[in-house]
Structure formats: C-alpha cells, structure tokens
Length: 336
Image (cartoon, rainbow, N blue to C red; front, side, top):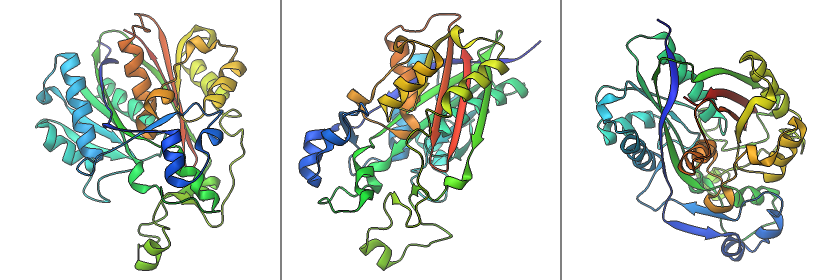
C-alpha cells in the first residue's frame, strides 16, 4: 500500500512585546514607515530576554500538538528550520525535543535562511513516504533575528535598513501518514553567487573577536564586498519555480487555491501573483499584523489560513520561499 504525507496540525507562538514602525523609527532615528511603505510590514515582535528560538519553538509545538489531539511521544521526528539557532552546536532541535518531552523523536536542524521551512516540509514528507516506521514529523520554523539586529541610533550605513524588517516567533506544522496524497512535489534551486549579499558573517571562517563586536560586525549586515541582489530577484524567479513544481505535480497553476510566500515584501507577492495570472485572494498576508518572522513566516500564514477556514479538502497549497545565499524552494500540497 502506498504511503503518503499530509498536514495534520499547526500551531504558532508570537512573543508579547510588540513594536510598531513608528516606535521603531523613534528608536533608530529613521523613517521606518516610509521605507516599508510598499513592503506591508507594520509591526514586529521581540522575544523577551528569557526567550530563545528553542523556547518559542516548544510553545508553538505544544499548540500544534494540542490542536491535533496528539502527544509529544507521537512524534517520530522534529525538524527545526532556522538560521537563528540557540547555539552553533548542539543542535537547537535537541533542546526542543527535551523541552517538549518528545522521547521518541529523532531530531535535526536545517539552515537555508528564509526558505528552510519549505525545504523542511519536503524532507519531513519524504521521511513519512519512504520509511514505514515514520508516521508523524513535526516541522518547526522559528526566528529570533531581533537578537542580531542593530536597533541603536541610525547611521549612514545602508546596513541599518535590515534592522527594520525582522520579527521573532515560531510556527509548528505536523505532517502525518495519509492514505491519499497530501505532499505532491517540491523543488529547491540555489544561486550561490549571492552568498556575499547579506548575513551574519561570523563562524569558522570568521571567528568573533573584540573588534568585530565593538564595530557591530557580528550583527546582521550587508557584506563588505556586497554582491547586490537585483530588486526583482524573487519576482523574476518565483513564478517559474511555482510553474515547475506544478508541472512536477501534474496540475495547472490555475488549479492552485493558495500560494504562501515569504512575508517580507507585499509588492513582490503582488507582482508574483500578477505574473502567474492569479488573484490576491489566492495568497495570504500576515506581516501587517504579525511582522516578518523569516523561517516561520509561511508556516504562520498557513496556520492563520487554517484558523480562518480558508482551506478545504482537495485544495492545492503551494509554499514558495527564498532566503540569503540565495536559496529558493517550493513545495506543493493537496489539502486532505
């Protein structure tokens, strides 16, 4: 008998501290509202001092399990998608497993910047489809990027604009064995020539030292030899990626009921939908209310779609995300 994977539950956690564009603008001395006018981001949430990627992930996971009527011991795997781990090592997913009490779950982290949530959905689905002993996989997208932002007084450095975009939070999706296809197809593409655009450039290639921290070069920033990404980078690539995954899944783009993209640039989402010939009613935007939480953003959008009753049996749902590097991913599901 064929094995398939479906989305069987979801949960979300948003920190309590809420910062509007106007409030952030006063903090950094920069017109945040003007800069984000076309991006659709109006607020961001900041993790409390005693919160981290792992603690937010545990809370999102608990919410997802409760919603699905499952227990931690029902999970066979936990996959954490994030580029803001608690530590370089050990894997943050191990901390989550311990905090959640998921004694039977194997765990690992993946990092493909803001597209890793989509890649994790594909990996988790394939585990279920290929291994008869794997029935439930939890995918968690989590973000604690405000830890890596410079919210001090604005300087002339263009790097400062990155500080206006990001928010903290976590979302958890449960994938379960199904008798009918849920996960259909996926694809990941990479243009590694853009690795030196922006990032947190510390690690084995550049260990942190006192000078780096004094100059705030340990924070999210543009690379000093910045390989600038074209303004239309995603618009030029997302539509073709969506078309390719639809082709693999043997459906038409017009058959899609919902496309969930990175929640960082509303104008890019609008242009992508226009290029695909689809109405904006077939996507969902959350950053005006929840901020842009990177690796969690598309999963947060899915959770809200579920809560709002926007998905019904038989609907095709496409995830399409991209992240620094540059890595792009798409995954197609049928709602079952």
